[in-house]
Image (cartoon, rainbow, N blue to C red; front, side, top):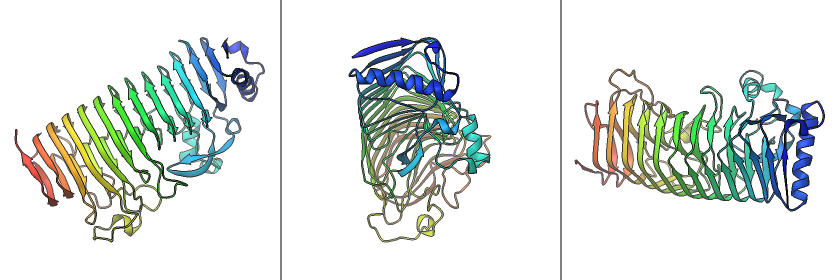
Length: 427
């Protein structure tokens, strides 16, 4: 195995494509020796998409900035997964597939230079034949570590481990502009045994979104055994989000000791008819939130994306249960504090034919912003616009509230319909 330390002058040539070829050649030489470490010393390196391999470590020293070009021709087209289903896409800036023991580490910065990609998406869609590249996508891999690095300006999702096992993400910072489209911080998709700790996300979409593919996925793979702890979330559409791509199941998730500041929503579950699949065994504890639209959303009528506007998705009628019916059960939320809530204390809306089962809230202290104007808490057809409202809960079984306090609402429940075996115990 070999290791190399390089500087920007190590990249021969003048153009971005020449620099890409030079850096990829160095990586390939290390891989050919059985693996090793490539260290980038301080300075700027501007390249296109790079492919990593097994037994390989990319180390960015302090002051090293790995910049990815916004030239479309710097990104080969590969078959990957986009929005929960197989699709041809522009290859990720950092990409690896069918590999093991890969590590990205250090005190440097990985910059996706996403501004041009966002402009193409919003204003010049005809320039994009394929979806924008992820900043880092490691797929079908085992033993993936990402540690210490700062990621910024991602063209689309930032970190995307897909069908990976034994993933460790620690001490990472992700910063994307608040208005940048689809720039999720971290999307573990159909992964097993994932640990996310001591990270900070300040992004334009969901901070962390746990996914397992849609009904259109080529095969169903669960996302399971996920631990998230000691992380800070800023801005973004949600702090920690489940779905809406959850057809392969999401289970055994623990979220603890995190802060959410100015996120639209706090803990957010989003699914709809057609997805199928099950989200279960989720435990959330010791979360502090401030200035969120709504601290807890469990939405079975999520309408964004493909087929989201169909009557099958939005109708409130009771429909037959089949393999397309999503299920949510055994969701526990303990020791939550939220201040300056702008809409309602919580929004839990199951399907009439498939109630959300076993939601427990205990030792919860929520306070509402008394000057906020009404807003819709959830992405659902005909959503009520709420402010200074208590919990909206409908179509659940065995929901339990123990020592739950809501300050600033006239009543604990703004809406309480078709909730079987509902238990409320005041502290």
